[in-house]
Length: 82
Image (cartoon, rainbow, N blue to C red; front, side):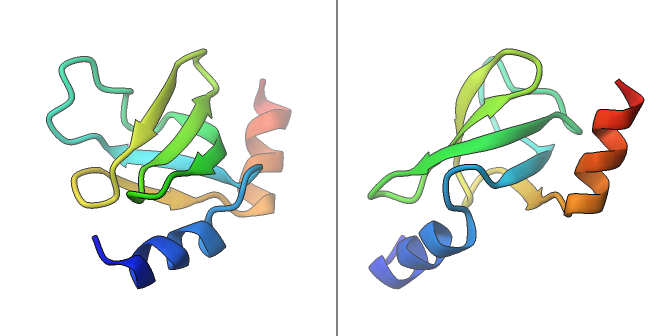
């Protein structure tokens, strides 16, 4: 991953950003698709580290995994359903 892509990830996913995992690549213990979490940090190789709502803490590899930002409305709806 090049420096420009890593910087873009850091700008798009600052700490506190809410995300939802769509699919986790070939991790031996993947986080379940649909799990939501909060970004902790993006490191210097582009891994997006998250605290997931199911208690897991894991890095998302943007080149192997699929995820997206959760809108404020989606997050509020999720919190109200709990």
